Length: 269
Image (cartoon, rainbow, N blue to C red; front, side):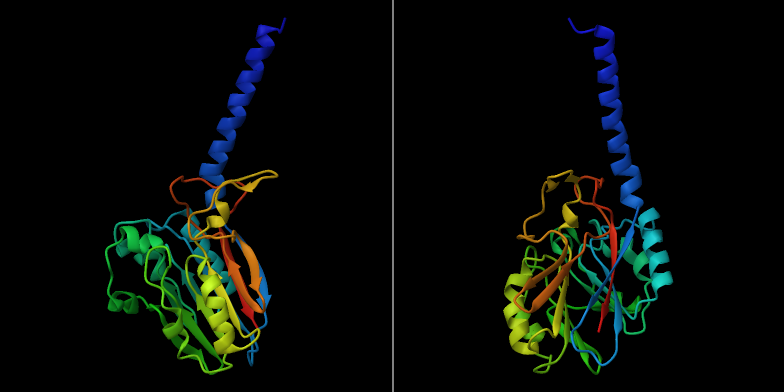
């Protein structure tokens, strides 16, 4: 017959372990921002360092936001790309303390995510311009003679129009494509190849949070609609490439487990 005292000790240990994991996922990992580095060759005349931020879900300047700003101050990117779900509902004013402190020589560019469409009051372009941020809504802007940044609206919440967005990019020109939900890549990749040519475009996306809660041997237990088969990291469809970031914030459950927040520094060559 099992020893009741030993059973009680095992129960207490199990409960303690669960509580420890929950506290870690809630209080530690959500603030433990990781910096990742990657290099992508798209035929530029000289390198451009891009800081990719996504899924901030910010409510103001918290520990994670302060860490992101410190990372940007340290890495000094040439360009900052924000791929949606910047705020966590309500209105854009919550993002002002963060966006107002973002600066890069080639500009700060932002596209909408599903959160902006589902639960956000609209902010006019002049609101972003006053903060030094360029919001791209199915449009492209030349940031240097050899590179266009193309921003496409979110497929899960908005009205993406990749064809007109790509139109300003000259045939054979290099492009950095920004959109929120990575499933957009399935549509955009063949269009980008037709417009830019082989290996001259890179897409950046978020939305998945890298799964946010990941278990040993199982990986991400859930990703939101619009993720498709993409979770995090580098992907390719033929010669077209995409990088999906785990993002900064959380959604639904304010926890991360085995899936640290990420600021991705991508050097374009």
